[in-house]
Structure formats: C-alpha cells, structure tokens
Image (tube, rainbow, N blue to C red; front, top):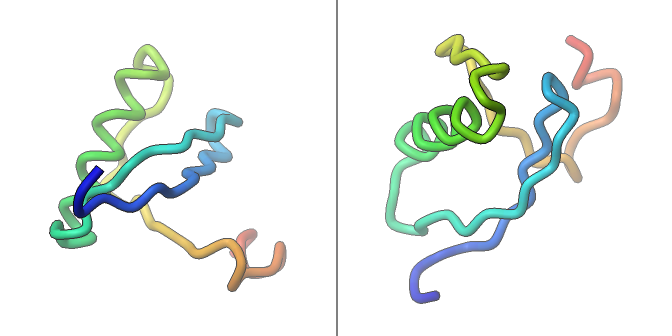
Length: 68
C-alpha cells in the first residue's frame, strides 16, 4: 500500500479496537472526519459524531491524561 500508514485506532466509547491504513497525504482533520464516519457505519449507529473527536498517540499518554 503506497503512501499509507497502518495505525491502531482504539475507541473507548464503543470498546473496540481497529487496525486501519490511513493515507499519508491527507490532513489530520480529514482523517478524523473519515474515521468518525467509518465508526458510525461499523458500530451500526451506536457511535455518534460529536465534532469533538481527537486522536492521541497512546504511547505519549498516561491514564490520567486520558481521563481529562
């Protein structure tokens, strides 16, 4: 897969983890929007887009930071 990066997406709200290839040439805002729409589909509507979605590098975080 040219120009794609394999990442693991952890979604605490629906208690799921996904491995997805993300295009390296897209802006983060576009990536977040695409991921949000995809989560609505794979969760059969359980995941609701809030427009406050954020991406974190889990290796840089502690549980205290995640709970804020």
